Length: 177
Image (cartoon, rainbow, N blue to C red; front, side):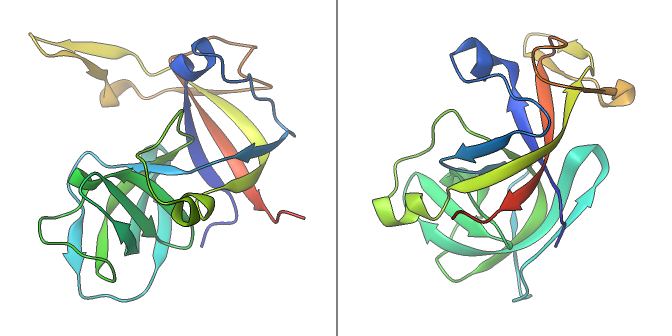
């Protein structure tokens, strides 16, 4: 398991009233979310794992620890939530899934029972704040996407130093006292 994690923090969250974040800060956040560009795949492996790969993404193998019609919680060493549609059809609690994910601090999450939601809260020690300066390119009639051919990051002291569309927080998990 990584000793530091890359957590996405989009600019719109700051614009919606979430705090600016700086390196060295302790950060209590009520949940961790995952996102994948592709549906995760069922796997026979029963070993929880996460390895960081390019562009602050993770190749994971995770256990599905909660699933409903709308929400899914996976455990790859950390627990993260997202919408049910990122898991394969027919997936159930206790199954293992694998794939490439991003991690982030959500503004809000799908509704889950209180006990499940409490398991998603983490305390983070922010080691670095990195501004994502990757430009966006227009897809005709579909909006804009990040231009992966021009990925660019810049380390900054805090999210106040440089306005970017998104930030990556390099964090260590801290045990709650």
